Image (cartoon, rainbow, N blue to C red; front, side, top):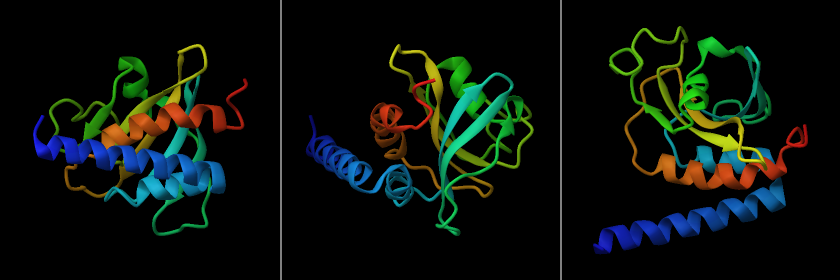
Amino acid sequence: MTSHSIMHGATMQREIAEFTSILKQGGIHAGLEYLNGRTPHQYTGIFKFDGDTLRNLALFDRYQPAVEKGGDTPMEATYCSLVGKQEAPLEINDAAVDPHVKGLIKTPVISYCGVLIRDAQGKAFGTLCHYDMQRCEERTTDLPLLQAAAGLLHGQLPESGG
């Protein structure tokens, strides 16, 4: 292991501990605000798969911090749908030029970083993601923290029981 990867691991452990503490003390919105503070994306949200609809359960908007929930969206117009289908994280810096997603989804979202949230049975429940209507710089630290946070969030969600 290099000193950089050890340092990165220590930073990740600290951030996960901070996130866990903030989630317990301040709730889901405070947790999303914490995650959003570590990314260039405007929005950080939790979404639930519900048939043809992607339901927003919680949202943090950097420019409107009082907003706690966004609207629901048709599933086919979301990158979250790809995370659900592939059951794998997805990171897009610029959807207009990314060959993996260009023309695949009709959405105003340009930059996206999302991970799968699984329910208690391990089934795909929804996503935890950062997204923006502008191009965002590439960051290697967003996905690992989101994945750790997603594992902690499901039990905190009001709709996780059903």
